[in-house]
Structures are given as structure tokens and as C-alpha cells.
Image 1 (cartoon, helix red, strand yellow):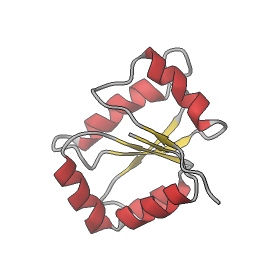
Image 2 (cartoon, helix red, strand yellow):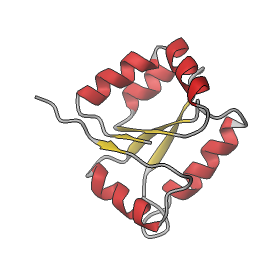
Image 3 (cartoon, helix red, strand yellow):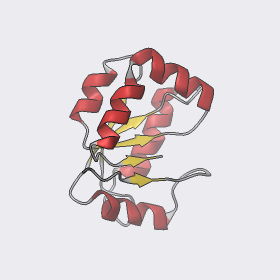
Image 4 (tube, one colour):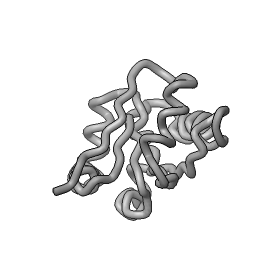
Length: 120
């Protein structure tokens, strides 16, 4: 039986407590796919802001290896390479549409049910 690992966050950037909690939540996992599909603006700039916050080692960041999971550029391969998933915020309708179009909904569900940590 698998256990689901979910770290939910809302309301903007992670503060110091959230950044400190991520390495504990993830254990030895560090390779995290970051999905920007909910962004209606520049997805690359959004990813770079996330990378600046999450990649530096603690206490400045969470010490993660962040991989940009682009919903329109080999998303299933990127997800397969990841040890965990971080779903960026934004427009929920755009997110669901893009995840459906790319085949990510079922892939994320399967990985999550298999125990892959999910954050977002």
C-alpha cells in the first residue's frame, strides 16, 4: 500500500518556515519538477523566481534541484525524471486545461498514488 505525500501551500511565496519544512518533507529527494502551467504570464520568469527561492541551500532556500516542467515541451519525460512535483499557482482553469492537453493529469495522479511527493 502506498502512502500519499502532499505539502499544500497557499498565498504567495513560501516564507522561512515553509522553506525549512520542504527538505524535511522531501527526505533525500531533491530533484523536483516545477510546473508553471497555471501562469498566464511569462512562465520562464515565474520559474526563475521559484528557482531563486528554492535552489539555494538552507537557510536561504530549500536546497532543491528544480527542473522546469513545461506543459508543452516533453512534460511526461520531465515528470518521469523527477523525484517530487511542485505545482506553481495561478489560473486554475488554465492549469487544468494545459494538464489535460499534455496528458499530465493521469501521469501526476499515478505518480502521486505511487508515493511521489506533491507540493503546491
